[in-house]
Image (cartoon, rainbow, N blue to C red; front, side, top):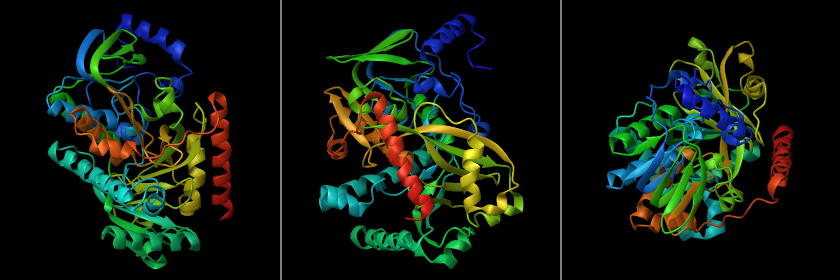
Length: 456
């Protein structure tokens, strides 16, 4: 049952609003106020609902979106003494923050040697330092606020072809020699399969400085910390428009917030709030399944509590849950609607990696919307003197979204150096406009999927 359905008057209004919004990405695949039926939602520590916004509020900062970006910004601003209102169209962690693969990776979506060619050695070094600070921030927040989210170290970046393995080996050496990053080690086929006994992988790069966690419990832990610090969190509050000015006016269905500053933390669910951001940040859909508990058979998937991400363009990623399930992610679609048979879509990819699991039951299958940029780097922007945005984490959202929230909090406090470093990154717009953009993206991605299949 919807968490607010017992309130008949409000429920009627929500139903009417939902009819007019059903084609928006926020509402295309999910019932309002309901998290997907994922293993994360089934196993998460409960979080009491926060009341929707009704009436008018005044704040120092209004933040739109209660994922990692918005929660981190809200928490750090409240701890610095700001009056913060955080608005969420569904529930805390509804979007990618509560559905993702849970990997806390090193670096960015673009490798460091590529960044060196794009922005030069000095700026590439600063970007690496930001990525390292992001991992440290996540660990510090989990420790300081005692967030129970199964944080564990280790990600294996696995390769299937010789060219991939050569690239992984060279890249690991580059990180060690150029950046002094010693928590990374190349593994040959034998050592790699000692960790992940899949016949598909012929080696890999083990990153002991990376990690993995329960993403929804992490988001809910940040929300508890933010609320305790004084943040007013309003769930079930869909923002309709933003009016810039000396004060920013944020309008929702049944109320509005007038604030000195505003932050867009919507990532793939931005919709039409900012055409400038939407031109550079593209939503795509990704999918995960959770098998039945594997029992002793879990050792035939992973022999240690690490996560795996492979080197295909359309990445496969997986790990074991604390109750011994295989959480396996892979497959992408573009546009609004998720496929009818998510389990079937992901199972095909799973069986290419673990053919011996053909008869294993799938207990949960869910989709989520993340956001990418053309260069797979997050896009931070100051859209107006008192309006900022951060999104487009391109698969590195656990760390980078948390850190982006901190950088925007610092910028509002007048310490904008870190924000400005990230905002200076070149951010080309996706080709095409309006309805043409999605088909163009799908065409490009189809080419890369074909390359994955034929081994180019």
